[in-house]
Length: 170
Image (tube, rainbow, N blue to C red; front, side, top):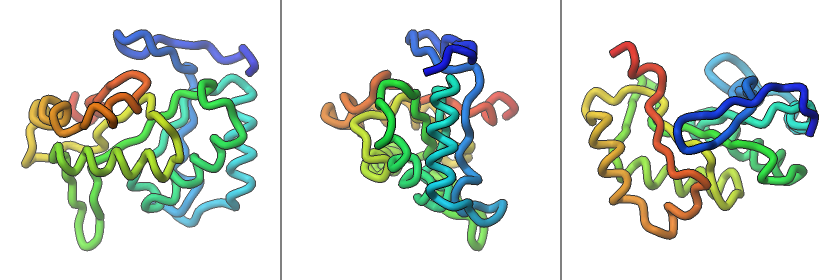
């Protein structure tokens, strides 16, 4: 990996990521348009990582699910420890209207599904995508710990459930 991209410490757990991350949403079909050719996007991800970008960001909602599958394919050509993989949970659908769910049981089920789609043993950073007005964030965080089995918890390099920036403005 090239060393041209500055690294920063993320949170208090000691995880370091590249200061520049790669948001992968538009690589596959999204609310903003059609996706790009899969092989081109895999090459782009590999090029970014070789250039020093190590923070890859996706979501179970993007595609939906297609983006995590693409990232999983791209990771096959990389050393897993060379990237910090972030994915999100919480948006169930947008048709006919946006449905947000940060219920701890739903979060757990989505995490297990994301691990399978990404075809990885662990996720570095897992966080909620949007505010759920029905479930206080404190419930999502505290109850998610009890809903996650020990087997699932050990699949996280650093067990982190992060609050999205959206919460800062509520």
